[in-house]
Image (cartoon, rainbow, N blue to C red; front, side, top):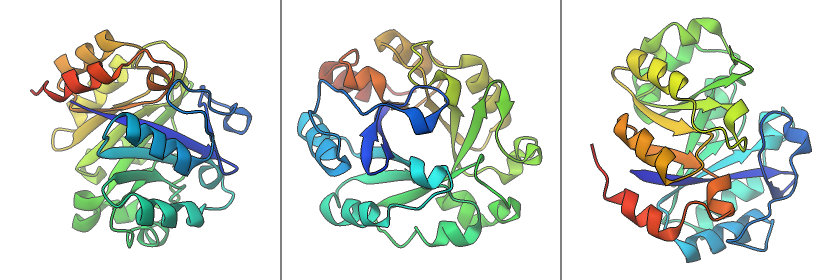
Length: 235
């Protein structure tokens, strides 16, 4: 199992995601770093553990403001050995294409910001794309027809329940199970709610191979030893 750390960036600073109101997220407080600028936080994370993949949420872009292209360029230049899953508010094929030229950045297509879903059926998008199926308050965020057409889903999808992020409520097992049943030809990455090793074991028992984690890393509940142990767990 691969544990993928999540870094949420708002106004150029790393913040602590807690559920819904993104514009009110507080600055990050972490046992792993004393910094809040993204580059320094990433350096400290990599000094602590050699993560091969890191998830970046550009909250300004997701909220419909501006994309932090300076940050994206820095990620590509300074951390060429790391693959970044980048959610930058993609809304169309054109906005996806603007981000695919970075060799180590894989743009995440979030259902909540998509305005057009017709292009998702293209073979290149299915193979290269990462589709985040976003939920909040029990509702799907995006075109309902996308949720009902697994044939439009990429080979890699993220089960994203925003309500579980930072809530210490555990992963949304019901959502994961439902999406796994539908996504017979796609890998499902778990996101939100991981509190402990036991949560990771539960996810592994359900066939989850990759999971996004933030709070449990930054407050020390998931240790370096845990990460190494779960690297050996395969299904």
